[in-house]
Image 1 (cartoon, rainbow, N blue to C red):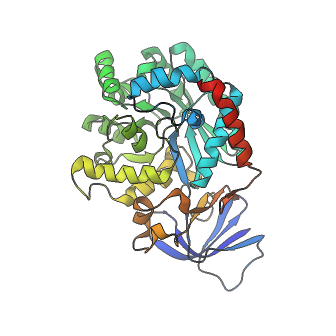
Image 2: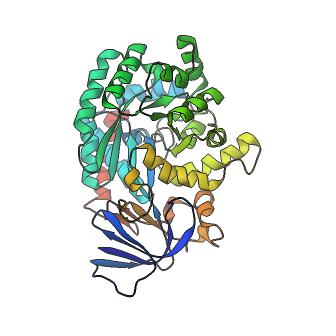
Image 3: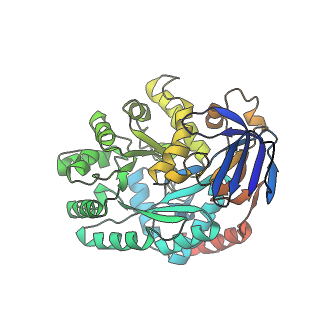
Amino acid sequence: MIRFYNAKILTMDGDTEIRTGELWTDGAVIRYIGETPDELPAFEREIDLDGNLLMPSFKNAHTHSAMTFLRSFAEDVPLQTWLFEKVFPYEDRLTPEDVYAFDRLAILEYLASGTTAAFDMYFFPEATASAFDEAGMRLMFCGSINGTAKDVDRLNDQFQKFRHYSPLVGYRLGFHAEYTSDESLHRGVAALAQAEKEPVFTHISETRSEHEGCIERHGASPAQYFESVGLWEYGGGGFHGVWFDEADRAVFRRNGLWFVSCPCSNAKLASGIAPLKECAAAGVNLALGTDGAASNNTLDPFREMYLGTVLQKLRHNDAAALPAAELLKAATVGSARAMGLSDCDVLAPGKQADLIVIDLKAANLQPAHHIPESLVLSGDRMNVKLTMCAGKILYENGVYQNGIDAAAVRRDCAARIPRLTD
């Protein structure tokens, strides 16, 4: 067992109250949270937090991890140009070995910023599963097919192979977007989801042109159209949702869907500001993702939380538009539940030990008037002192654990760049 003591603890289990005490992990799970008892069991390690904060780890509810290979490559262009001229042609050059290498680069960034799980949509799933499994980090695949009904068999093959791949790796049904596939695929995915009783996820209403194009093609917005073909009978959700209106939010509320916002990517590509305040007011489930590093350009949950809340203030000309604590909940609890990781959403006995330690003594977090709000509005990835996933410490005080050689990862990726981008 590992003992964390002299800690401030933010469990996120129903509230954002800060407690004091200690937390014990036993293997992959949390065994105890509370005050120091009179008698203590034997521990393999005891960590004095000296007043620093224990909290649930971040979960990245929408990302394309291996797109780290295009970080800072395609800049200052709108989404359609970015995607069709600066991304798709270069992705065609990728091999499974490339994806593995650049997933490992993303994992360095995830762990250093307190992220223990990624909802990843990309190519060559075997390579990605290997990268995350070896690192000890959680991975939930999101299906990424596009095309026609014939491609649904490929989705099902991947789903059956990876849904129970390992204790750390699972799979959710999904496809890229309405505009990169046709109605036969949408209905085929819906039929598969109904047969398997599984949720479905996809990009949705990311840009005005995508949103309005769907209305022209199907007479309904993407959210309303997907509901009409039975896609969400067993839940799921959508990524971005920038151009959602009241009727779209009603679809998500009615079906218990997850609205996964990516504020940085949407801002960089000038896609717009998602209606997070309206979604929260309508009772829509909120989660947070980064999108890929090519459109962000980091995989940093702190920056997503900050932009997520301050852009709502600008959108509504209201400094109280969306409480900062709502973004903290979205980036931790909400994102975990969106991914189907309800066993590692909060800190509680019996839950998976997916947690982080935040350095509250850092200058940017002092004085600690309101810790949850301070994490969102003042916090930085450099404040993460320790990242634990499934009871294993993977990052501590700037050093990667579990056999992760950060320098070797960087060298490997640098050697691949000329072939991929020249």
